[in-house]
Structures are given as structure tokens and as C-alpha cells.
Image 1 (cartoon, rainbow, N blue to C red):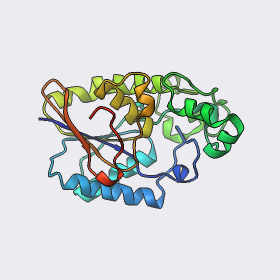
Image 2 (cartoon, rainbow, N blue to C red):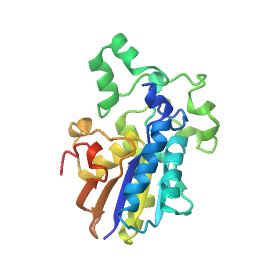
Image 3 (cartoon, rainbow, N blue to C red):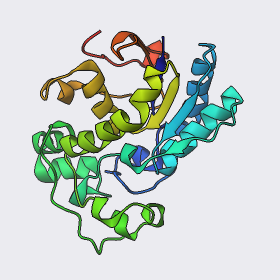
Length: 238
């Protein structure tokens, strides 16, 4: 029976400042580092042998995974994939969420953050926060770099990668840990839990709390749970 562990990175510096982060490559805040170490402890308690580690191109997810692996005393080289990056927030990138709620209204910001197919205005390509101007993404094909994304756009790239690179490993009964982001994990949960376009808007992913998913031979979920029960969020379907 394969196990899939999903971990949203620990609190980042821009999570702390309540800024729309997206593809901007910020690091973990002090609280986020603690969350990552605790995540490692919770995973260690499961006594699972993890065969593959996946993460995005982004520092906050990479360093979350590094702290988890340090706790597990595992030196396996992780597989990095830009397809697991956070959703691109377009022209909202870098802006303060509370300030934008006052400017555009709370309902509009909620739509931008949680709707299935609504996307913000594109981020100007000359903006220093645009991925084209960030060294981290120089190896990503230019035509694949977005100016803005909806959750649907994020879903399309995440699930294509999952089907091509991860699902087959689970079918071989391998245990996998993915350290990624709020929206890339929401995309995975939509696919795995078969959530409809409206229900996905209700799903919240806590930072640094491992979600352990047990699968059968058909890659169907038979059990799932957050390992830190005190910070668990409603999974909507279980």
C-alpha cells in the first residue's frame, strides 16, 4: 500500500507580511522553519520509508523539505519541478492582502484567491517580481512562464506533471513526499479527492502540517489524515 505525503511549506516571510507571493522566491520565516522541523518529527513517527522526495523550484518549499529530510536523517536527492510551483498571482504579486481588500473589497479578493477559473490582471514583464526577471526560473522554458494564473491553470500544470512523473511511482508501491505550496497542493487535492469546482474553493491547506494519504493499487484514497491534529483543516470529503 503506497503512501503519499503532501506538505505545504512552512510560513514564509511574505506569508508573515500578508503579501501575495506566487512565483516570487522568498524564504521561510522563523516560524516556518519551526513548522518544517515539527513536520519532520510527525513524519518520523510514522516509521515510513520514503522512496522519492519532490518539491518545486521555490526556496520556501525546498528549504521546508531540507529541514524535514534533516529530521528524518535522509539524504536522498529531491526531485525539483517548476510545475509544482505556487500559483502566479499576476498583478497582485507583492501587494498586501489586507490593503487590497480595502481597495477592491473583501469579496473580490476572495474570488481572486479561491475561485476556480478567475485570474488577476497579468503582471508586467518588466516588473522585478515577474518570473522572467528572477534567476531561479532561468531553466524554465520561457513559453511556460506565466504572467498570471487561475487555480485551473495551476491545476493543469500540476496534474499533468503528477500523472507523468509521480502516479506511476505510487503504482509501483513507492512512498512519496511532496513539499509544495497552498495552491499546488489544493490542485492535487482536487484531483485526488475528486472535488468539484465549487468545493475546491472551500479547501484550506495549513502550512507545515503533513497530510498523509494511503492509497490502494488503483491509486484511490482509502484513508487520509493530517499528522498534526491540532492544526488540521477540514478535508471536505473524509
